[in-house]
Image (cartoon, rainbow, N blue to C red; front, side, top):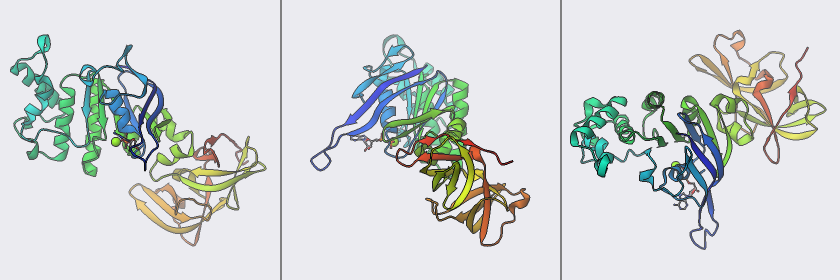
Length: 371
Ligand code: ADP
Ligand code: MG
């Protein structure tokens, strides 16, 4: 089911005299979620992700704007009539009920022609449980399950009515690192198998990048950018998006464009065309700093970290806005013997972004390759 949001806005009125200003949790959001895709809704805590999900589910009413499921305007429809499945961070299972009963719970209240017999309910519960691989645990109570298993029960419960849209609000946040990775792959598999249009909310960029067909980055209730994860990573629209995506994070420097050269501090690091003289922010992805004895960019070496396949070179630079400058090289790299007080890099132009100092919007440039 395609989901379309049109100028969707949610304002929360100021609470009291101390906090008189309205909070605009979701601010004029317009976009279309294609049928059968997994969308990662991504942004820092407090940016409006849960509010957005609550609007789509119908748990909250928008201040203005519309929501369509397919061609149908569902803006005024109560949650139970929208055909959605919901999963939250804190599994929200009934502790005194078995796994089976927890999963059949949404089926118990079906009325009239939709009413199911006990056998039919158990069959549907078994199907959903099988999908998330907990069919062996049907007679246990939530207290007898691990966190990862409990979240699977919650997912099975969300799937049992065959929703047309599945909404997941930070579903992995309560799990430890290893289970998080395992469960996110599981969610990906289930989504591929069922082809249910899914919106996955997270503040963890790596999580969103790894499983989403498309990511939507938001900040202060405002949509910043949407696209395929790699496209957004390679072409961030502004400094916020560039900084939000990537581990280790992008290196940001105070810089300047002067007479077709890009400077970081006193170092002329690239020849570029198409940008007038101005002070800028320069962002360089860690994989865009190439070790190069003759490179133009000189940093003070702090140390080297070996992280399995990669090595991370940690240095400092007086124009850096991050406390350290990080670059990534592979251990097979012959130049990876790093010693001494200084380290020199050349910059890979497609890993370098420059941003307007006031608006923080990205400025396009053409790099001139050295002869
Ligand atoms: P996220 O899920 O991205 O962390 P939320 O959607 O929960 O963000 O919140 C977005 C903003 O709206 C925050 O500033 C939050 O304080 C505010 N907010 C959320 N729910 C309410 C509410 N019921 N009343 C007032 N303000 C709210
Ligand atoms: Mg939230």
